[in-house]
Image 1 (cartoon, rainbow, N blue to C red):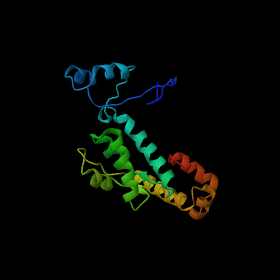
Image 2 (image 1 turned 90 degrees about the horizontal axis):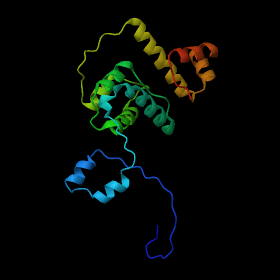
Image 3 (image 1 turned 180 degrees about the vertical axis):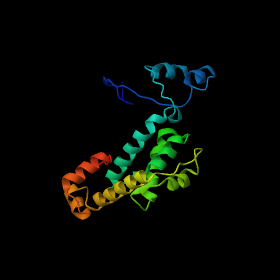
Image 4 (image 1 turned 135 degrees about the horizontal axis):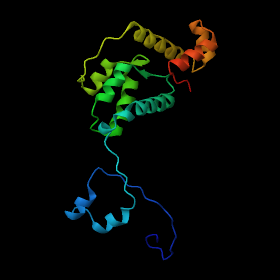
Amino acid sequence: MQRIGSPETIRVDVRVICATNCDLEKMVQDRSFRQDLYFRIKGVRITLPPLSERREDIPDLIDYFAEEYCRKKDDGIKVFEPAARDLMIEYDWPGNVRQLQESVQSLIDLSLSHLITRTEVQQHLAYAGIGIEKPKTLSERTREFRKLCIVQSLARQGGKVAAAARELGLDPANLRKTIKELDIETG
């Protein structure tokens, strides 16, 4: 490699990663993409199906984006209620992973509660869903309420389990056990 205007040659060892949603081979045939450039960047091809074809990844992505964004904001933990998650799994995500990430961040910013509801997701996506939401059992509602109370207390106490246990009137060991049972992220 040479810098522009310099006679000195510099050796470099780089790997370039490119991404596109276009069919470059077709574009080369149509002469709308330079063939020489195509062969320089072709290398190893990894095809990633759209998010709508791998819905099983959506819950993990929601959790990852929510945890990362809440940690950056340092404004407490927010979680998606199961019905909200179900709606997000059902949605087709035409903007793919970037749209999902933006939606998770927007819902966290817009939600007044530490529990993001199905209604909030419906309004944000302008999508009511195709499935009919089945009524929750008392056990499911109790679990969600317990989770919400613990998440809110942890947020108020800066993630400190012992302080949250005092606030909730629980033994710290029991609270840790409940946090594990309810799959609440604390760190």
